[in-house]
Length: 89
Image 1 (cartoon, rainbow, N blue to C red):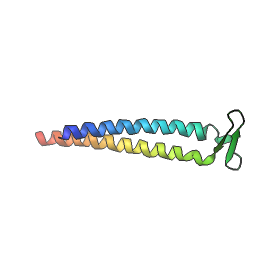
Image 2 (image 1 turned 90 degrees about the vertical axis):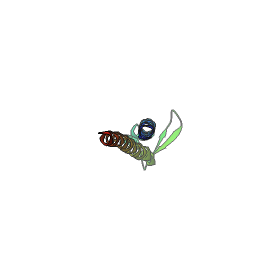
Image 3 (image 1 turned 180 degrees about the vertical axis):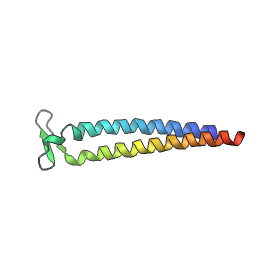
């Protein structure tokens, strides 16, 4: 039972890490790439005809939270492994 739980936590941790990488990419595309040209919190890109806003930093927050969640899940899975090995001996 502990083995299934450990592997489930690790798989969820990997998916969470993948979503963290995806949101970090969104953070770059929508915020970091344009952060130096914002005027009054906005930038209009005439080539793509898109308005970027400085509120897009939320993608960075989401990425950081997902990364932390991924690390915590991985550590809990590792702790479960050590706990099950300690009970066998």
